Each structure stands twice: as structure tokens, then as C-alpha cells.
Picture (cartoon, rainbow, N blue to C red):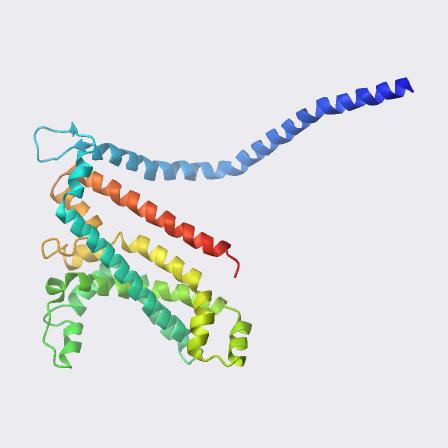
Length: 319
């Protein structure tokens, strides 16, 4: 009996001693397996860090220095003085305001038009494929070609199609890019981004369950109430995603401003990317241009992170 108890006790002690080794071995194998799966992605990760984060670190370094290529004294460390100077710069504040106006105006108008066209394309009619292809085409055109098209063919004060159209109702010709530069840029941007919003909303419309719409019709809800109380809540995630992606891309608009108005008259239509270009490549002020770039990147990351958190929270919420 005693020998049996001693044997069981020794066996228990042996199992307890061997258990941590087994767990450690499994953990080591799991870690090795994880690194083996991640290994093919490491070159891409290293390349991404080199081409994105390393230039940003260099930009941070330049933003702390007073480096103007037109000055003979050369490169001088000034700390945070560049950041203080740009916030006191009225032109920088005006460019920031233009960036907000252009981004919000483009995203809002493109989303409204995209939703309207998506509702039309959600119905079956003859030639729907052709119409859908024609509506998507503006998004496939290069921004440079689109800006040139609007500047030369659409908004030209002498032979532009917009002046021809408003002339039919008795309105005189308008020099759009000089008199209304921000509105001209918004026209080109809304024309380019409406197809993108339309595709997202159309995907949401085609993904909504048909039985819910049938139940609403059986309950006597008209088209308006069905859209407001049934369809629109279903489209919320698609609309939020379209607004987020559109804002991230539109805030970096450069081609339309450069080709249509060149930021003018003066700096009336310059946004932050174009003003940074002016300070760096026309004013040769590398330090302040770098500081502006850092401020824009930080503001964009902050706003995008906040928006992504709201979107992910809506995806986690059960309908």
C-alpha cells in the first residue's frame, strides 16, 4: 500500500515536472510557425517602411531647420520656430480653409449625386449596362486629362460648353476659373468622384435583403418612407466608407488646382498640398514646407483614425 502511494506520488511529481517543458515546447513551435508564416511578408513590410516612414523621419528633421535655398547662411537648426511661423501665416490658414471647403463640398455633392444615380441604376431598364459604363467612365479618366477637359472644353470663357448652356437661358459668359476658381475646381472634382460614390452606394443597394423591402410594401409604406427608414439605414456603412475614402483622397488634390487655376488668382484657390508645393519648389523654403507637410500628415492621420473608429464601431453594432 505504501509502495503504491509512493509510486503514485512519484508519477505525479514527474508529470508536474514535465508539463512546463511540454508547454514551452509548444509555445516555441507556435512562435516558429508564426514567424514562418510571416516571413514571406517581411520584404514587403521592410520596403513599405523604407519608402514611407524613412522619408517622413527626414521630413521631421527638415522641419526643425531653417533651410532656404536662396539664403547664403545655409542650414540652421531652429527647433519649433517653423511650426510657429506657419500657424501665423495667413496664406497657410487660407489654404487650410480651402482644403476643408473643397474636401467637404466635393464629398457631399458627389455622395448626393452618386446616391441619386445608384438608385436609378438599381432598377431594371433597357440599356442599363451602357448607362452604367458611361457613368463610371469619369472615374477611369486620369486627373490630368479630366482637369484639362474641364479647363479647355467646359469652362473656357470663349467656347466652353458651360457658357454655351447658360447662354441658352440668357446668362452672359463667365470666366469661371478667374471669377469662381474654387467652384470650378469643385465641378471637376465632383464629376470625377461621383462614379466612385455611385458604385459604393449601388453595392449597398444590391446587398440589402429583398424580403425587408417586400415587408415594408406589405405594411403600406411608400417609396419615400421605405427609403428613409429601411434603405438609408442599410446604406449607412457604405456611405460612411465612401465619405472617408473620398475625403482622404480629395484632401490631397493637386492636379486640378495646378492645371485649372494654378492656385489663383493669387492664392485664392490654393489648398494645402499646392501651397506646400509653392513654398518648396517656388519659394525654395524647405524648412517651412517640411513643417507644413508634417502638420498635414498628422491632421490627416488624426481625422482618418477617428473616422475609422466610428466606421468599425458601426460594423460591430448589430443591426
